[in-house]
Image (tube, rainbow over all chains, first blue to last red):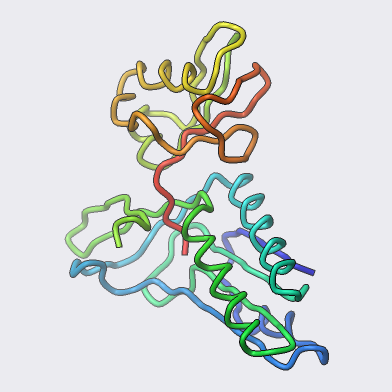
Length: 140
Length: 80
């Protein structure tokens, strides 16, 4: 079944991949978003992710359910992390199992694009010089 | 009626709190609630037309508000 989650614990992409891997599927697509060491040239030491928790979970659940229905597979899962993350840590994982690769790629991409556009999650980047700044997806 | 409004991230910093209460007449819209929020100290750092939600779904300025509603003013999102 489609599933979404939001939490403080480190993400485990292999667990999500296993969750969508079934004999009915001939393809599994996995997307992992990680904290990059710089943003627009400024060295980053870490990121604080926060969220409007209840709505973020509700919105993300609506997204995975809609993508699952549209692409004809129940195997669509997404987890997003909140809290303080270091460079290299995973902030988001999307896993999709689908009978065909085209569907797996398309559904995986649809989830991450919708998440970035409308799930109420916020981030504050910490820079090497000690400053912090709220950034958002429209800035990239 | 008194309406509780949740604010987040940079908007919470601007208002100095993660939630605020505002008083608007019965029959008000989200636009009326937003106007009261923007009139609070620091409130002008919230744009005139931010992302808005009513009961955890995105909403429009013209949507009606009831006292029990959970209204939220949402900064630009940054998930992913």
